[in-house]
Amino acid sequence: MLTVADVVGEPSLNLTVVTGPDQLMREVRSAHVCELTSPADWLRGGELLMTVGLLLPMRLADCRAYMSECAAAGVAALALGLGHGLPYHDCPEPLMRAAQESGVALLTVPDETPFIAVTKWVFETIAREESRELHTALEINRALTAVATSSAPLAALLGAWSQASDAACIVCDAAGQLVDATPGTAPGSVAAAMAAVGTARASGMAWSVVDGFEIHTVGSRIPLAHIALSAEMDLRSRAASSVLVSLIAVDIERRNLSGQVERQRRSQVFAQLLRPGIKRERAHQMLARVGLGPTPLQVATVAGEDAERLAFRLQAGLGDALVLVRGDTVEIAHADLDMLVETLRAHAEGLPCGIGAPVAAEALSVSAMQARSLLPVSARLGRIVTAGESETVSLLVSLGSPEVVRGFADAVLAPLDALDPRERLELLRTLDQWLRVNGAWDPAAARLSLHRNTVRNRIERIAALTGRRLDDGDERMELWLALKSRAAMS
Image 1 (cartoon, rainbow, N blue to C red):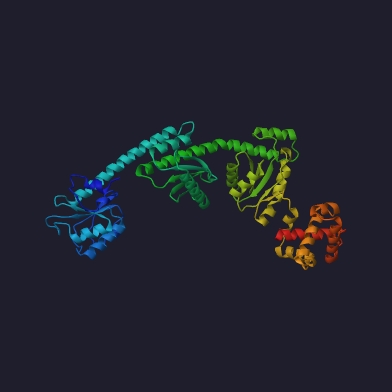
Image 2: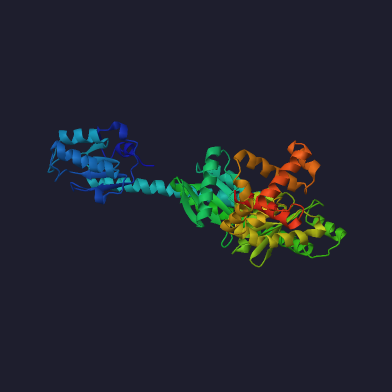
C-alpha cells in the first residue's frame, strides 16, 4: 500500500509537509491535478490532489469550503505547487489553517518538481506494487493447486490459504451447517459467516455479499455447499480467491459425484423395502446392506415442487436416512423421530408433511401409507402431522370450519355453560374423566378423588341438563365430540 508518507519520503520529489503530519499514513491510490474550486465531482477517493491555487481565493471562508469538500471526497493529501511564475511562492496562511481544521495533510511542491514528475512516480510505484502483489497471488495459486490433490483437499486448501492470506474462509454444507474453516478463524467470525450463508441461502443467489462476506454457492441446479470469504481482501488475496473458490468447488463436486452412487443404491434398497409383503429376513438383510440395524423406522412423506432438490437437502441433514423421490414427493425413513422432525422443519418448512408410525423393516409400506394419507391433513393444518398423535379426535375436528365446530360444541354444552362457573367446571371435569374410562364408575372416582356416588350424581345431573341418555353410545359420543371440539378450538 502506497501512503502519503511514502510519497513525501521520496527524495527526488522534494515535497514538504506543511500541516497534518499525523495524516501521512493515508493510502494514495492515484495522483490528480485540478484547479477547480469545487473538485469533488472529479475525485474518487485516495487521490494526491495537486493544485497551484490559481482560481482559489485565499480567504479563510473559501479555503475552509474547499478543504471540507476535499476531505469529504476522501483525498489522501493536498499538494500546493510553489515557485517562479506561479500564484504563490509561500503557502498562504488561510489555506494552512483550513487544512489543519479539515484534518487533511497539506504538502508543498517546489518549483523544480513539476506535477508530472509526482504523477509519474506515484503511478509507477503503484504499478510496481500491483505487479508484486499479482506475482505473490500467482505463488499462492501454485501453492493451492499443489495441495488440491492431497488426501484431504479441503483441509489442505484452507490451511494453505490461512498461511497466505488474512481473509477468513468458511465452508458450509447445503443446509448451512459448518463443514470446515481456515485454521485460527475466531468462533465469532465463523458464526457470522454461517449467519451470512443463511441469508444467502434464503435469497437463492449463486453469489452475493452479505454482512462483510462474499458467499459463493457451489452447485448449478442443486446447491451442494456454500463458501464464505471475508469481503475485505488485499490485492493478492483478491486475485487468488477465485482459484481458491474454484478448487474448493471442484473438491465438493467430486465428493458429491462419488457419493451419488451410494445415494442411488440406498434409494433402490428403500424402494424395495416399501413393497408390501416383503419377508422379515429379507428386509433385515437389505437394511444391513446400507449399514442399518433392525431398529424400527418411521417414514415421512413431503410434497414439494422441486423434489430432487428437497431430497438432497433432507439427505444432507440426515446422512443415515433412506431417501426416495416419487414424482413430486420425497419419502424419507429414519429411526429417530425427533431428529426427523427437526430436519423436516429446517429444510421443508411450510410444505405438507406426514409421518407414519415407527415399524419394523418389513412393515415400512404401512408407515409410508400412513404418511401419504396425512399429507392433505398437513396441508390443511399447515404443520407436520404424525400418525402417532394421541389427540386423533381433536385432529379430525380441527379440519372443519372453526365456526361450525365451535357452534356444535356450544350447542351440546350450552346447558352446562349456563351454570355457576364453579359448578360448570366440576361437571365438565367429571364428564371428561368419566368418558375417558368408558363410563366406569370406580376408575372415574379414583381419577377424580371422589366417592363413586358423587360421580354418579354429577353424571345424572349432566344427563338431565343436556337431555342426553348416557347409557346410549351415540348420545355419549356427542358429548365426547363436543368436549374434544372445544379443546381443539381452544
